[in-house]
Image (cartoon, rainbow, N blue to C red):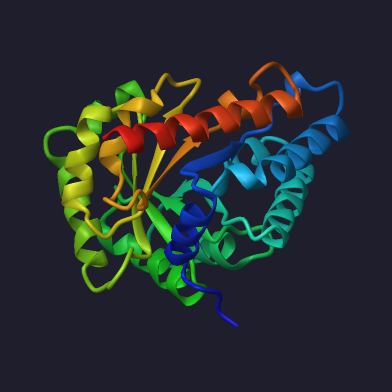
Length: 270
């Protein structure tokens, strides 16, 4: 049975728990004495943060770097998140042509270690989005298309109207939706002055805002990304929660609670 659409589940969780925080889980093996400690901390933090977050976002690169064991950990993490009814955004930034794009879509939007949603790269052309969007919709999922990323060098290729052109395509694909679309966008929380503009350009797109915490984005500057009812966007913090004070579940939970409360306060104040 196909689950309820990802955007619908994300909105429901946002309103029920009053949280706009996305928990990034990017395990760094050099911070742990052994692999089992990494596994236990990652899974324990996930479970402890469930009441505080709208979704979880594993960054695939960190699991790939751990080899086969890392992929097994990713599958275990996704199983745990699904059991906890926590939506999963898999941050893989995949993008390719033809059958290769279809294979990526099948792997990361319908497999045992897959997310309910996937970040995708549109820079090989908009037709390369089709397999991802179609697979996501068939599985009640979503895609988040890179529009303006959080890194300082993004302007090298995303300036000059290119991000705006991608946003137009995201909006076009979402225009058929009555609520939030299955086609969302990644817009960096590190560009706060641009967020209201992206929200206006993509009125039906769920927005994923990376960059809270270690990358320097401030919760009080992000209200422009949200719809009037406080939904429509989630803000991701990874290192700022998972390694808030070294390797401590308690410190991570406190950091997540603080970020959640700061985001809510920003919306109340707007």
